Length: 137
Image 1 (cartoon, one colour):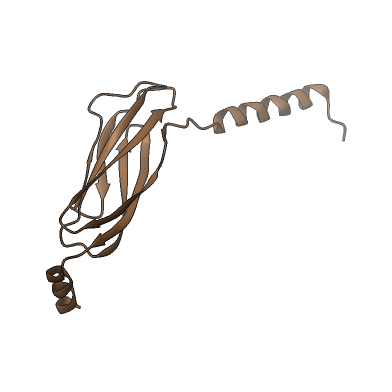
Image 2 (cartoon, rainbow, N blue to C red):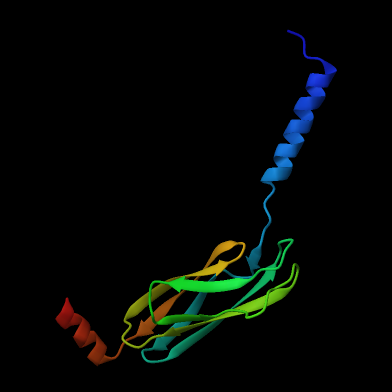
């Protein structure tokens, strides 16, 4: 079987169009997706700022955030972030009643999909919190 020039050209065009469609818009690109905080005494608020750039071809609209713990809150940009524009998300973590190593993932919900950021660190618990923990376990 001999492949004609038209068939070869058709295959090349098909392959090129396939690669164009699978090229992904980067969207939200964080300077640092995971941050660490220094050891902190229980009861303190830890504040972390996540800087990002919108590397997509359209504005990003922030809709919501999700986390597994009510101790973690995020302040999202109120206005859309245009392509190539920078922005920040501020996360606060309440260390009240927390013991030892902590790690949280925050899912940022946008019009272009969901993005995850994370933080980790150590909380020095009070004696009272340690006792409460021992009694529960």
